Image (cartoon, rainbow, N blue to C red):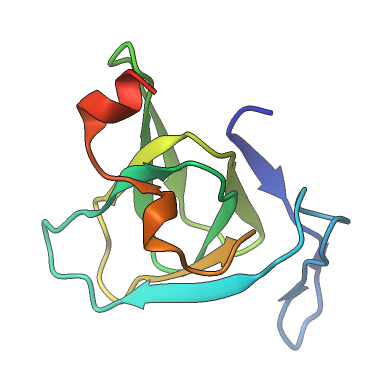
Length: 130
């Protein structure tokens, strides 16, 4: 499966909207870890790696940012996340980084595996030859 934007249910209500997700109903993996990033300084990048096994789903809960996916060929695809009712699915072995964070951005990351430093591919050349 390739990276893709996935729409989540959006229940509209005059009192405020509600969006939810459930394992396997909306994303193709069971959630083993959840983390979020916030207070990212202007001009900073996050990420810059891939995972051997981990799948990830990223949602912009507040604000906006770009997720840049880079193929081994160097070809880039940019996904702008700026709504809390869709997210970006990233399969294993997807090199990505995040940039262009707006003020007060809050990004939510759902992972298929618990943290394991050995699962990270942090060198782009090694990623290209894996």
